[in-house]
Amino acid sequence: WEAGWSLTKKSWCCAHKNQGCTTTTSLPYDCNAGAVNWEQGWSDAKKSWCCEKTGTACDPFDCNAGLANWEAGWSLQKKSWCCAHKNQGCTTTTSLPYDCN
Image 1 (cartoon, rainbow, N blue to C red):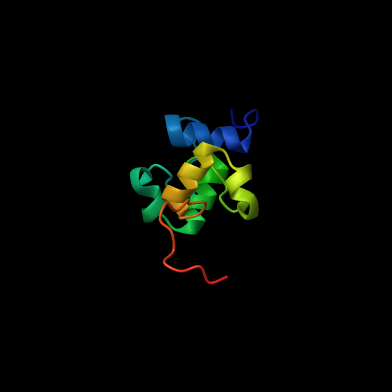
Image 2 (image 1 turned 120 degrees about the vertical axis):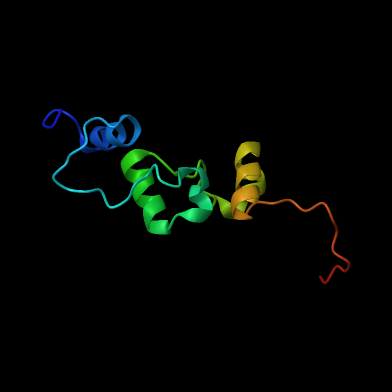
């Protein structure tokens, strides 16, 4: 496994199955610790590292991608997720008290 596995496979197998872990160096983050509350509990650096290296803590949608045309361009699932988690792409059902145009 040391020579035949990719770094991604080693990281995933180590993080998820505790197999293929190297013991000569420590990983910068434990992607299992606090995974239940990763959105609020982890630093941006830990989120980025764990997503890239182990596939943990990845947002299912990039809410900045296509934001200018979100109403027509996003799926219902993306709209729902981005509104709930990032406060982006939310529709409003209330009208403003005044039309200032």
